[in-house]
Every structure is written in structure tokens, then in C-alpha cells.
Amino acid sequence: MPRQVDYYFSLQSPWAYIGHKPFRDLVSTYDLRVNHKPVVLVDLFSETGGMPLLKRHPVRQRYRMVELQRWRDKRGLKFHLEPAHWPLNARLADGVVIAALEAGLDPDRYLRRAFAAIWEDQLNLADPGTVATIADEAGLPGRKLVERSGSDEIGATYEQNRQDALAADVFGSPAYVLSGEVFWGQDRIELLADALKSGRDAYSSRV
Image 1 (tube, helix red, strand yellow):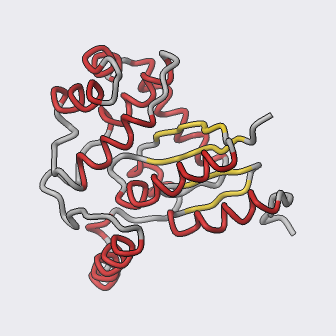
Image 2 (image 1 turned 120 degrees about the horizontal axis):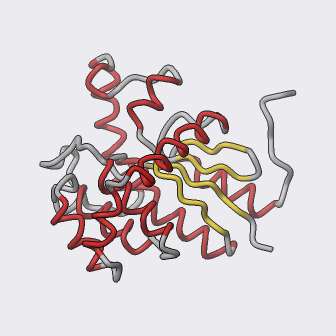
């Protein structure tokens, strides 16, 4: 039976974008089952002691810009550090992932295209038409998923993902949870790979 990883993220997260390809490489290598869990970041930050970017000290904001450049080089990506339509309300774009899952569809091609749309192409993923086009390009029924994304049922799942994140000790995006062990940040992917390769038991904060 394939091992499972709970994947907490939001499309507005640059770190989720930066880590998505290496994470998917792990998924292929270890035949993982991925439980996609888009989550609203603002609420998650506030409930776990984090701060939105613009409320952080300028020193932290400047360091973030340096880190983005380092990881852009490290991962071999080409993206804008401050894309034209960011920050954005990711509820619509994240909701399309949930709607796709509800319909039994694999959201990964959409995710790859949507991450690139924000960070490379500077498209507005708060715009329904843009999101529908991106989903169509990924082989999904874009208009149908966009319409479903705004429903109360998808909103309830989005909220449940936040509750699940808090219960799992997840506090940011991306986070990968393997057998209850949280790997926070795309810079922990190598550690996730080590855990998968070794097959070790999950580490716990309860020692």
C-alpha cells in the first residue's frame, strides 16, 4: 500500500511554488499517495503565532527577498520576486483544487500551471476567467470547477483543511506531513526524502 503524505499549501505561497516540482519528484520516486489540502494562510498564521509579510520587521522582509533569490537559483527557476498580482486572495484558485478532488480529478497539472501563472507569467489568479483558462489548459473542466469553487461545500472543506492543519501542528505553506511528522518548508524536502528512503519511524515532539 502506498505511503501517504498530507500536503498543506496555498497557491499564493512562493515557497510552495518553489518546492512543488521537487516534491512531485519524490511522489513519483516513492509512489506516494498525496492528500492535497489547500489552506488559507492568513488565518493559519494568526492562530499559530506567525505574522503576515507586511507586518514583519523590515529586516525579516529584506532577508526573505534574499532567500527567494537563493532558492530561485538553487531550484533552477525563473520567476518574479514581486509579481504584478501578488499578494492575492487565493480562495478561488485554491478552491479549484478542492473542487477537482471532489470530482475525482488529479489537480497536479493545474497546480503546476497555476503556480507558474502567478510567479512566472504574472497572471491574476483572483480572476475567474483566468483561473478557468488555466484549468482548461491543464485538461480540467475550468468553468465548471471555478463555479464549484465558490460553493459553501468547497468553503467548508477549505475550513476543514485549516482545522486539520492546526490539529497536525502545521503552521505554514508548504508543509508535508508523513505519518504524523511535519516537514515545514520547501527547504525540508531533502529531509522528507531521507525519511522516505530510510523508512524510519516518525519523529515526535513528545520525547
